[in-house]
Length: 262
Image (cartoon, rainbow, N blue to C red; front, side, top):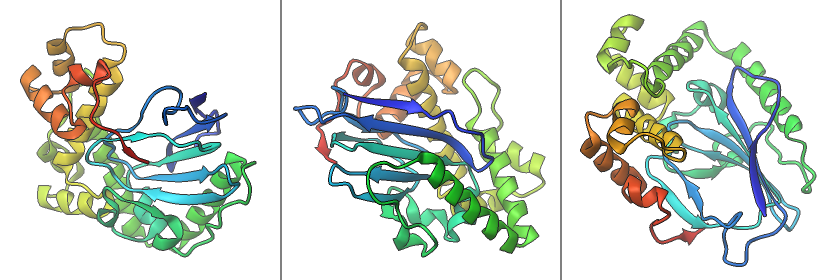
C-alpha cells in the first residue's frame, strides 16, 4: 500500500510545497494504493527525488504539464516532489522553462550543478532541501537585480492569475497594468520564466480548481464551474476534457483513459 503525504517541513520561499509518496510494495495490478497513477496538468515546475527498489536514487526535473497522463504505477520506496514557486526554476536552472514543458528530464542533463543523488533508499528529504537551498542561495548572489526583479514580477503575476476558487480573478491585461508592464511583455516573461503563456497557465489553474473541489463535491456542476472561473458548465466540460482526456463526470466516476507504462 502506498501513501502520499505533505511533509511538515519548515517553509521555504522557493518551495510551493513538498509531498512524498512512499510504498511498501507494488499493487499486483500495477497500481499505487489500488489506484492508477494520474499526473494532472500543472503550471509549476517540480524537482523530484525518486528511489527504486534496486536502491538507486535519481533526481529529475519535471516541467509544466499541459495535459494529464495516466499510468500503471511502479513500486518506488520513495518519491519526493518539491514544487518550485513561479519564477524560481529559471533562477535555479538558468534555462528558459519553455524548454521543459511536458518533459521529465534527469536534472544533470539540464544543469551540471551539485545534484548528485544520495545513494540508497534511506534518503532524508531535509538533506535534499538543504542542498537545493544552498545552491539557490549561491546562485541568487550571482544574479543581477534585474533578473531578481523579473522573478518577483512573475511570482506576483502567476499568483494573481491562478487565484482561488470563488475569488475574483484579474484578467491578463489587468494584471499587466497593475504591475506596470505591457501585456506583450508579460506574455514574453511567462514563456521564459513559467514555460507557458498566461492564458494557458490560467486554463491549467482552472482545471486544478475543479480537481480540488470535485473530489468532495457538494455543489452542482454548474455551481462548481462558476466557482472555478468558467463561463458556464459547458465551458468547464470542454476545457476539462481537453486537458484531462475525459469529462469531469467520467473522471470522478473513475472512467479513465487507457493506462500507459510509467
